[in-house]
Image 1 (cartoon, rainbow, N blue to C red):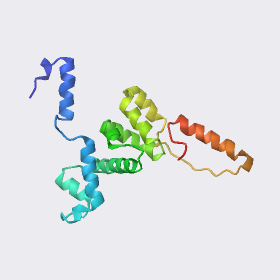
Image 2: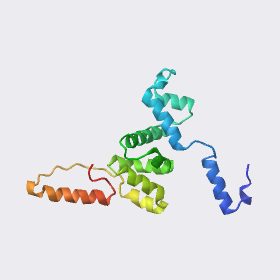
Image 3: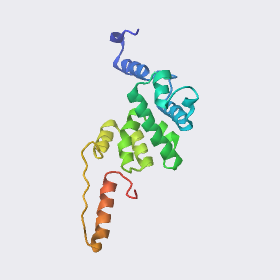
Image 4: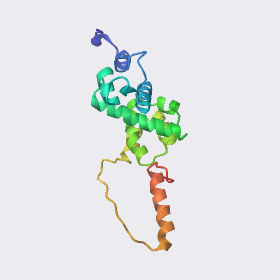
Length: 172
């Protein structure tokens, strides 16, 4: 065990980083991709498990929450790479926590390439402010409003400006 009291602040910072993600440990994207492929191909049935979740909990020692996160990340990674909206390199350039944080924005139609680039390059404070703009934990409601046909272009333009202001893809 390392004597933490003897470490300089810089050395302590580096030591903490090695504890959280040991050198040579797998990148989160490698784990997500492997579990995702196993899920997609239904391999666990031949291994004697009723589901990928049951297999991951038993053989990978994942807790249920980590498995759910892994599954959601795989859905986002596979969807955006298959559509050509992002590459695995884009996903691999960001931390797992930032990848998880951008999932709600993607579910609202955010441009994956733009958000992944921002997740990679923005300082933490700026990233937190960007995420706050698309907080989907707030209750939503649906309104149905009848408007004259002549106002439809103005409504569409206003919605487009709002989407762009939130960093979402207005085409979605």
